Length: 617
Image (tube, rainbow, N blue to C red; front, side, top):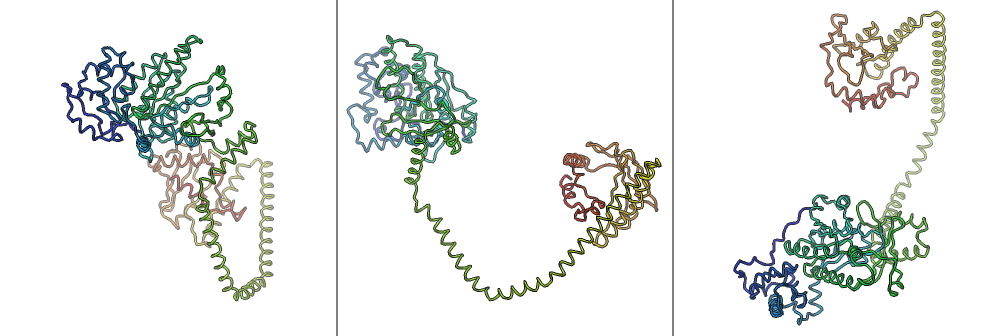
């Protein structure tokens, strides 16, 4: 997770005492290797006779390091208040003594420069494709400019870099803070949050590590660079990225017409020079965004026919236009909620199908992909698992062949066993015929019962005694069904432990004598025995004791228990179970013994339903 960055443990310079002296000798400073430090503080000039007021004037103008002084011309230093030519020369000489490697008359070998460049780091853009064509990412000690028309992804790339700059890498880069100068008011903190989530960082910590400033004109934009230098100096090594979005927006407003073009270019050159010095002085990456205009006055640029890609569809193209060490290339990228990333294959296919890519482009990019894969892949190493799998398969085939040879003598015996099984075919067919006859008989009986019920209903209607007859029929059914169940259960080694019956009339909540007989039968297996009648009119999802009537078998008869002595335990679990069962319509899955008689495959013991009820309790 991202966290607030702390100051480096290694301090580059000790604080200068009020009298201008330093606790270290000049000789000890010479033993400090360049790669172990970032810069030398201008306060060290006190040791070489430079007044504190002059040092304060340097800091006021945004010059905080010895290297920063060496990057300034004598002419520019002479413009500072109280700086004569003699004083400037004295300061320059003092800087040469403090940091002799960087003096104008000193040359380094290419190998030494190579060692120095090992201090550089790169920041991922969030897209592996873009990182690849720019040499691994946005590089420190240099300026990276991205330009294009509106809605091509420039600001989105800047927002993504605000997050990726804080990601530690396995190369030793520990992450750092970001400075963001906004000239068009396009910075959106809410946009940072989903990008931070993509990289599994704390969005609040990420935002806390971004220092934001709004520039209102080109002069203010240049003055902010002095504040940038001061901040980089106050927190050495903490900042890793400086973003300006965009570099030219305010210059286009402040300088209009060809008459002001020279002044505009001059001030823009000063700003770019300042940015380059900051990037080298503090080892930070500088990222600039810029737009292009349709009215390009220089034929050389017109001949290049620069066309930023990305206004159509989600798949966009990034093209490397100019680099001191990389060749021109172009790759696809997309902008998602998590920032800039690489496109999926499905997105490229949709772009091809939509006619946004010519056939030759598709063929060329496909060939490049295959070529890149073959070039960067060790085919022999990739084929090792395949060859091993083939060898294993051949070994298994040999084992199978040996096993088949071993069991071949037993094949004849197996055929004899199969023939003996086939000899029982007539008996199996006779058994199947008997089963079919039994099923036909059961169906016939059921049909007759249906006809009988229809006749009874017709008679009840004519006589007007449907309620009485229904009660008689229900009583008969209630008497014989449990007895039939008991007989069948005893054959299966089971006993009746409980019995339920549903009244057809919702207002019927009386204790039927039929229920007493069934309860007496259950009591012969389990004691004590109870009769529980559900008052259907009071049943609800908020079940309580008022919906139940309970009678207990006592001294050969059933005595009703007072309502205040009845409670559900636990009531909450019971209510939860009732609600859950009603929502799932579990009653539709209930199978009683009558269902079993209609279809003997229906399990009247309701094993699965009981498991469901137990899970809720």
